[in-house]
Image: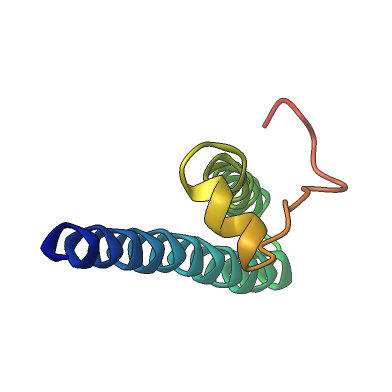
Length: 92
């Protein structure tokens, strides 16, 4: 009986940690989008390029969480979609 309770607690803890990681990654994407828009409005090409690189890196990190085990199980369970960087250069 104790083993079952411990196993359930571990599974619930795992789900909570994985979901938290995915939510943090999504929040980082939203912040990167805000920063990118801010720099696009300012017009400095160097800042825009750096913001695009950061945004692409944040998207890549999020997609790694969504695609790789064990967080991919939680991503599928709670419908965290893979994000795309449409319109960005691949060699950023």
